[in-house]
Length: 145
Image 1 (cartoon, rainbow, N blue to C red):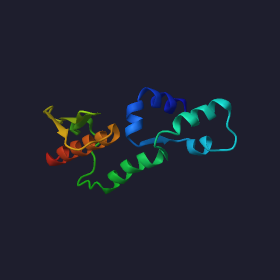
Image 2: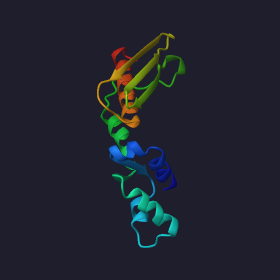
Image 3: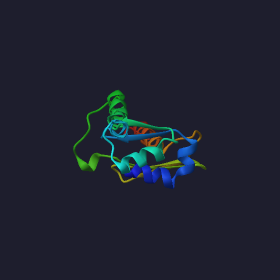
Image 4: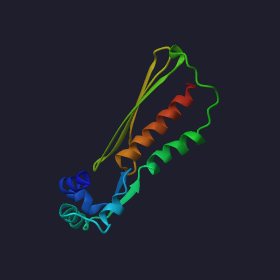
C-alpha cells in the first residue's frame, strides 16, 4: 500500500489525469475499505480518494499472456538442442512523447536481425512490452525460427 501512496505522491500529474490500475496479489480493496483500519491506513485512504484507482488481481495480467500462448499455433515441436534454437530479445519504452519497441533475433547460424519502431498509439509499459513480444514472435515466425 505504501508503494501506491508514494507513487501517487511522486507521479501526481499522471495519477490526476489518468485512471490507474494497480495489479496486486493481495486484496488491497478489501483492506482499504474494510472496517478495521489503523490510523496510518486511514490517512493513506484519504490521500488516495482523489484519484481514479482500480485494484485488480495480478492473475488477470498473467492470464493475458497465458491466453496468448495457448492461441499461438506452433507448427513444429520446440527443439531442446541449444545449437538449433533462436533467441529473441525485446525492449520497450513508454512515455508521454510516445512508445517505442526494439526487437533483436539471433538465429542458430548467429545471424542477428534487429528492428525498432515507434508505436502510433498510446500505451502503458506493460502494453508496450506485450506489443514487443508479439512483434518479435511474428518476426521469428516469418523466418521460420
